[in-house]
Image (cartoon, rainbow, N blue to C red; front, side, top):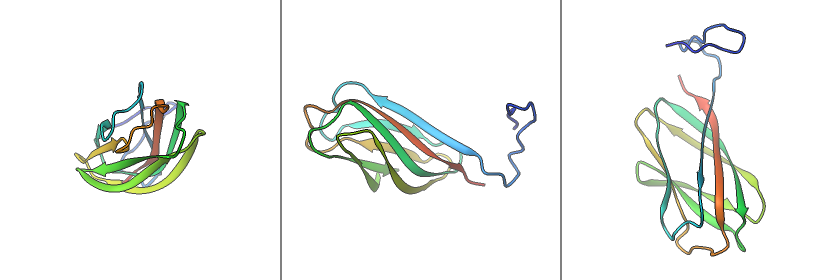
Length: 123
């Protein structure tokens, strides 16, 4: 498999170069209590190291979202009253399912959230 880089060279997937990988998504409106608000099927081995977020309507108090890998809790993302980011350490293999679950108590003010999950391909 090759991808054409901006300089028109082909990416060699067998090399040991670090390749950036980002997942992104949004949650329109207010998430329901305990709802799975995002689901990703991981296409190739990756490691996620940071999550960035923004809520158009921020919560009145911190909102804790569960991060799940194959239905197992692997951590929590805390969304505060301002946009931000949070370091994480999660490695996924091809076919893993990564999900984000809303807090058990919904915050009526929290709405319209955008997430970006940044990491790298694993070889």
